[in-house]
Image 1 (cartoon, rainbow, N blue to C red):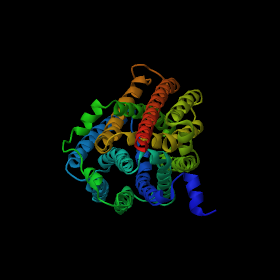
Image 2 (image 1 turned 90 degrees about the vertical axis):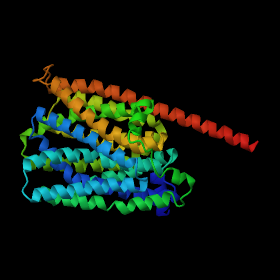
Image 3 (image 1 turned 90 degrees about the horizontal axis):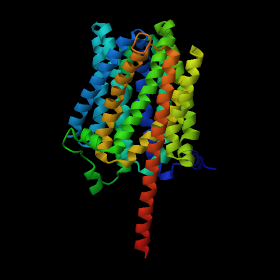
Length: 435
């Protein structure tokens, strides 16, 4: 049996789709590799902050995200997509170079460390959001169910490489060197954007030119968000997703506070390697099959249900070992199943929502969720209004996870129903033509 046949059977990708799918795989591979080089540094910094300090930094991150999305939408209203998408990655690459230069000149490292924490947190969402906006523009609904899981494998592979680079080589280098490597890796994606655009749109027909530029109103994406029930539903799903992540993130802060900063960096980089190996295996053998066999509703709800049980378990046995196991399950499940499944939802919205509303949801709503949930977590704590200890807070998180599961199931079911209705309309039209 030929390799191409085996590849198609394993991934459910048609032969004429292989080039674009592999290019997309490499695209997100490089994006995630660049991010994972800097991520352990950011995560290790969190244990040096008190809960109120961390809450203030997350508030600053939210404000920075709002500003970043607004500036992005200003440019999105004026540039063609061929310039907008690569422009985002160039701007981030230049920002990392400038930060490295500031560090090299001896500027206040404590202040730059806080800036780095905030800016990397903005970058971590923005670059992936723009990538998936581009993907939802290139691939149809049917293709997305078969191809998005494979493309998402590139994120896992890139995260593995980035984590290995940190764990084996880059951990001994100063932050400015890591930033230069991050920037260089990020710039490599620029030619891939052109390859994908030419491969998926080989002839600049009327449809392609229609999609070349967005609405000139920079606020149109926010307006569409407010008036679009589907987008509000997706935003709510992400908002609750952030809440569950916050419970685990702040639990991580408490659990790992007994270790030194270098030890935390190495523990987190090893955790990232394990998570992304498991994510890769799930994405290769399970994700697209779950959506195909059990439906998108199940794919969106399965990890939230598991997280509800995980939070209850962790509340009864709050140890480092149990935390690391549950965090591995949470992250790998979110990366392999929840993330590509929720991106499929964006194939049902128009271009304006994909490129202007989606970054608002993925970045501003996400970081707004960070602010809400971190203060919520502080209010629940022993020094807060409710005076709950860690196990009690985790039980509250489990209830929130069940709400998340219900919403995910609803969104997936609505998407599937609309797809069935669209197929029925198309079938009726074909029958009329044939008659």
